[in-house]
Length: 120
Image (tube, rainbow, N blue to C red; front, top):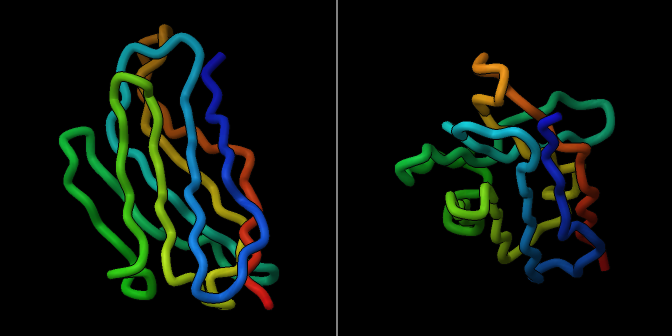
C-alpha cells in the first residue's frame, strides 16, 4: 500500500547539479526519519544523507558541503540537492523512509532507485 516514488536522476557532467525527489504515497499515518542511500556496482549500499522529521540532518563525509537533504512534510517528500557532482558520485540512489501506515506498525520503506551518472 505504501510506496516511495523517486525521480530526478540522470546523466550530468562533472561539476553539474541534480535534484532528486522521493514522494511517499498510500495509507500513511506518519513519517519519521527519511534518507538517501547510494550503491555503485559491486559495492555496498551506503548512507548519503538523512533527515529527521524535525529537520536534523546528517551527511556522509564524501558529500558534505556539496549535497543538501530537505523534506516537505506536507507533501511527504524528501529531496536531495546535489551540487558540484563528481564521477565518484555515480551510483543508483535510493530513498528510504520510516513510515507508520494504516496498519499501525512502523516499518522502513525503500524507493525503486534512480540512476545518477556523472561523466563527460
